[in-house]
Length: 323
Image (cartoon, rainbow, N blue to C red):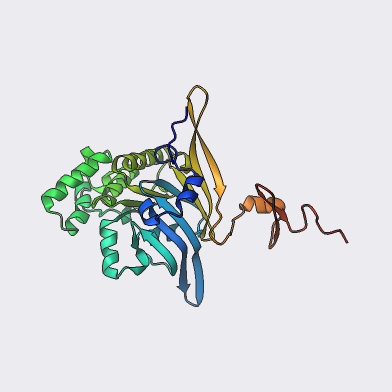
């Protein structure tokens, strides 16, 4: 018997649920809303378009992965959501706050209180001459927390990431996985409602990477924090609720985790990938499909009663007669 509710099991949503809810109050339902988002970098006389009209919605408490090749725009998107970079056009809302409309002072407050960030390089997350507990205490003290409360909070966070016995250890005495656990504790110090991680397992071995992703899942469940992880890890789909693939600055595909049940009630997990159609009707065809059919500048799109078929421009029914 299926255990699914209105949107499927906890943390697992179907594509139809996202479509159905898109017309409702986005600020209440979705924690993160990006609409027609552009980011253009100017380098000397050149303009590099990193995001090209990207649309994205992330539910509250979702654990989501973002994948894409180098230069696809995934890290740029994470920097925008972190308040580290401002979009060139479009809209980006996090917890109902418009990032584009914020003043510099408001952005500092946003980065300090509402969003936590974990870099791939632990050297960017940790101060090398401070102990693990002191590293976690720093953002708390800077935010006005008393030293006594900061100490208690730091010790509690380090316990939650499995480092109770490492309170006084310096970062260079820890393994790579332990350093990243401390980094996650630092990012969560001020109890943000969004945690962003940019390639957090990029410098870790497979076993340690598994432990870090398991930690993200536990924190997501225990704290209810919305977590977005950018990664190259091909196994990410098995570890998160949804995987968004970015190509050329737009969302290309989404992969959802589904539960299926047999007649005996036994559950299996399957992953289904969907192409994404944006509000302008643009659809990114997977590159492997384009190469297989030699699709170039044009394609024929034919409408049937319940589906659309795409052909190369000189193929399909009623193709032009050969000369």
